[in-house]
Image 1: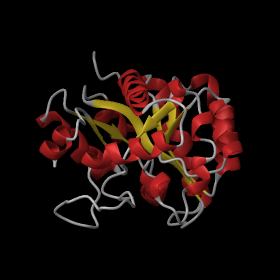
Image 2: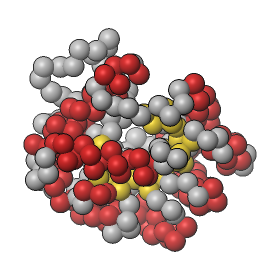
Image 3: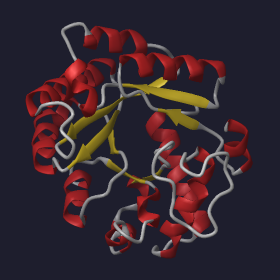
Image 4: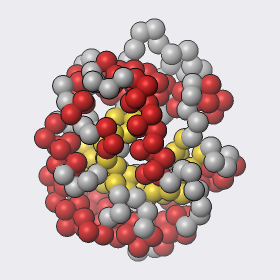
Length: 244
């Protein structure tokens, strides 16, 4: 998988942690591939029900490792409700405070919870060093609410989905280029393109499909594909401190 990513021009990869166990595993994997893989440490809102009084210290113990470059994936998800709203809010606020303590950026998730998440982020804004709204799928006004907080916007293969991502085409060029990131959300959100990528599994997305996301963005942008690639790469390098 890493070789296929490299062949596609994806030189560095962020491995996402979504609970304590996976955050440990992400950091361990990244440690095996210095300067090629990096990781995050966090508790996804789906897993917020597992959050307890020791969770922040456990995340902190993971996050102090040099390969860990952000706290998250964290935030609110009021779509599937695998954890209750109070559980999600408690886990989210604790992780914001941890990120502030460690001076790490936030890797944020939000689905069907925009206003609630926005109010929490506004409350903590002065403590947050940087944040990216990972896998943004919302409307233009929502994107600019986050941009007004000086946060970055991450776009995935959702923009390639003609069934549900076409609204992103209308304002992708309005997102300031220095606030735009692109990502795959692998193993999820395989870009809907033809011909389909030749991968070991037709259902498992991989980092090597990142150029497909880039190409779709370029179709609806006034910047060239090469310029978008350069800017978004620089944005990710700066955000995750990939060249320290």
